[in-house]
Length: 106
Length: 201
Image 1 (cartoon, rainbow over the protein chains, first blue to last red):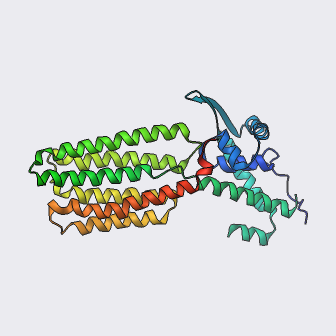
Image 2 (image 1 turned 45 degrees about the vertical axis):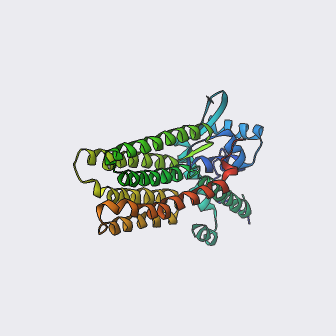
Image 3 (image 1 turned 90 degrees about the vertical axis):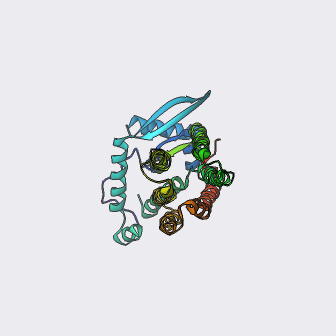
């Protein structure tokens, strides 16, 4: 069944990896690159590309620092990102047919 | 976008949220260490009473508390260096621990030393605050067993009232084992179970 009566979803978030990253970041104050790589099960290069897209959209910030001598890349979601994610979830609910919508709430 | 793709997206969000929720970087090490420190301090107190050296009791407590705080500080600093993600739950838990530590020191050491109240009520007050610490920790991490442990501490505080003052600290030991060390070990086992998500690469 194809659903096309609703406006398109936010194209910045509408990607498996970027959606996964924002779903993680919404629940944490910050997360480092390796942690995101592990939970989203992606590669370094792939994740970097998606993180850059989210950063360009202003949905997250990337901070590079050092813990001792080790370089660390820390990511956190911005207020704009939180609002966009909430809008995306609302839009997803609208896309679901009534029966599935009820199932998701449960 | 078809319905299957839509459901996949919802499943992905749920998976990620669940994985993050399970990343309980709290290892329980501080719980376990403090449990043993307090048991050692109580045994030390009774040893000093037995050997008729009551004037050393406060020193005994200050020394053990200092040991506990040094361990907590080292543990916290090491964790900050290795932590991969900081959840809001962890931040709340950290502040709860810091707040309770200050209350423990004020109500367990400073106020009785200033003769604001008798040392005999210390175990009752400590059990009450300990209950609060465990109950709120259970709420923060959504762990029912910790909420029940918090309740157990409050029941323990009430149960200590009829016990003669000098023996109240002894009643504290079983409470510490059941209501503090056991949850500490459960915390630790959960941490080990979820460790692949917490580990460094």
